[in-house]
Structures are given as C-alpha cells and as structure tokens.
Length: 305
Image (cartoon, rainbow, N blue to C red; front, side, top):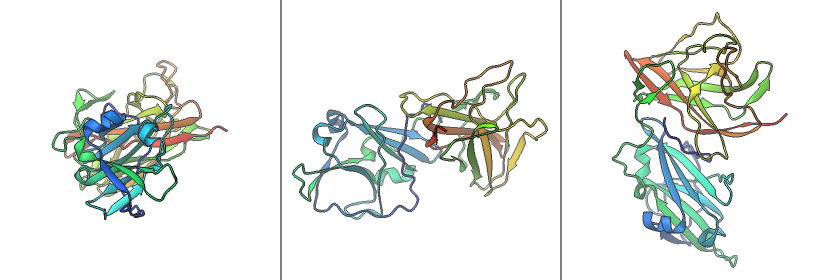
C-alpha cells in the first residue's frame, strides 16, 4: 500500500454484464510504443497480495477526439467472459482517466478498449485495444506489495498474504461527532486476526492505533501519505484490542475531520466538501506474525450542506 496513483474510476470485477459485440468495428492493437505516441499512460499499483489496480489516462483529442467510451474486456477473442464500461474521471484538465481493480491472474486476459465511432455518424468505427499484459511484467512484484512503515509500529511491516478487506462507504456524513465515514473490515482468510482500534481523544499524545488512511482530493496528482485513523466519538473506556475471527466482518465509523489533540495538532483527513480518493491500511497479527493489509482505492464524497 505504497506510492499510490490517483485511481478514481474503478470496475470491481463482481458479476458485470456483457455489452454489445464490436465485431463490426475495426480493432487496432496498441503497443507500448504506440501508446506513448498517442499520449496514453497505463499505470499499475498493487492493492493487496493478489489484487492490482490498473489506470489508463489519455487526452481526448486527435485520434480520440470523438471517443465514446472505454470498456474493459476479460477473456480471449471476440467473446470475452466479462465486459463492462468504465466510468470516466475528467477532473484533470483535458485528460480522461479510467481504471479497474482485478486479481493478478486476470491481467493476462484483460484488455482496455477505447471506442471511437466514425465522425460521420455511421454505425462503425475504430476500437483501440490495449492489452494490460503488454504494459506490466506479470512475473515481477508490483509496486505496493513491499514492506511499509507505520506510525506507532517499529520497523517495516510486511504485506499480508491473507485476504483481509477494508471497504469504505461512499459518502461522508456530517453529524454531532463531526465528519464520519463508515468502514467495513472483513477477515476473509482462514485465520483469526488481532489488531488495535482507538477512539479519537482531545488531549495528550495521540492514541495508539493500527488503522491508517490516505485521503487525497480527487484533483490532486500526488496521493497523501497514510495517517492514523480513529473511531468517531471519544470513549476512553472502550477496549482498544480487537479480534476478528476467520470469515467475520465488522463495521465501524471513523472521524475524518479530527484535528489532533490539544497537545499534538494534526491535519484533518477531510475538511472541505468534495470528492476524495481513499485508501486504508490495517496492521494486525495473525499466526504470531505482524503484517498489514491494504484496501483498493475508492472514491468518497462529502457533499456541502
């Protein structure tokens, strides 16, 4: 969960429906070199031991001035087992960004297709196809799966091989406790995990916690570093040690505008209304070993009142 790109338009591969076949369209295979000439950028980031986020960014001019959308195809030939349109992010001036998250084993059959109809309005056009395997060496470890350093934890913490998922809600809610974002932690592995979750507090040193968040405004190019994340509401009596059995989930609520304590000020994760790209990291112990899990990036929104 390191050096993150701003990925804001994802298709999580869970039962998406087929789309119309483009057999009548001309298909142009775009190589890595041709992508550079077209001004296309393909970036990959590991979001867990077996999951990878893929991002395509390009400028909608020249060959792509009339493009109508970008699709993800998974499978071989003209009859892929999965197809889905990707939602576009245009927060960058004169740029389009799309992306998806998939298991590492699916990348060799994953294609991104930029659809450009004929300018005369005819039924046909050109589909520019980028094979993901042409842009990433699948046998190499992807950036993001390395050990990481976290506040309150000595040394580097290795990435887990267990399936531990951190999924945030889509909306930040303003309430009496402040700005609150829900988060669900799921232990989909076969082992129990132990971690530390702490509530916010107003004085002294920051409470020890094993949950961290990176919250980046959607228009920013550089992702924010991970910072401690705290449960909403002050509760010094609440136990901080937390266990999650194999196959179980828990839902919590985080205070995302916490300003730090009176003694040690901090920067709130979210202050202004807008859209943000959020990632979470959880340090935990399983089988006597300390390790960390990383969430996939997700877009959340704080709407103005």
